[in-house]
Length: 250
Ligand SMILES: [Fe+2]
Ligand SMILES: [Fe+2]
Image 1 (cartoon, rainbow, N blue to C red):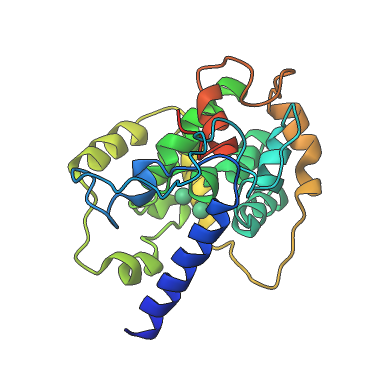
Image 2 (image 1 turned 45 degrees about the vertical axis):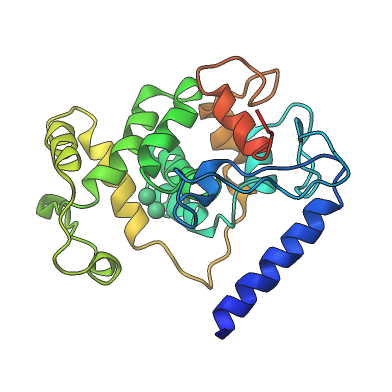
């Protein structure tokens, strides 16, 4: 067994041990594990000799969320480290862009940080759509698309990092190509482009930006629901609830 396998086994054993200590049985959604396991095969029934009920609420292994969570609470308690988003937003702010653009930069990768990585622009846009100006959600959705295409008029080149990430031969799928053609001719094209411009050059491990810097911009541009994000019956409330309680059985 190599070192990595050994670590995986240790992590699995620890996870197993932690989940055994719960009063309820937490089961991972198939999307957590698909790839590591083949979803069409039968999954082993989790070990449950005590006959615990399935978990139908918050996962006690995660930090508790307030009864009426705000966007900032999700940043604090459910999203991964957000330096990349904070640095992008600060860059946009310092460049003098509109608050809508700053907010789009602040939120553009929340799906990667807290929900689903694949198609992250689309998921991210859906998450925020009920709460922000339509232009902000549009820019978040399309940043994922336009970032694969250079725009010399604003000095945006194909990210050098992508050659490393995806190989020199990588070409976006046809549906991304179509989405780009449509975005290119859209009145908000430049908003998505600005997200990619402020995204690309923003990561610096030595720069520390606090979320507090954006409290006012969030307050003015993100319609925080009174009932709490996830409990407000908006078209994406269920997505926020899933982020809040990702291991609920149903
Ligand atoms: Fe992104
Ligand atoms: Fe990004």
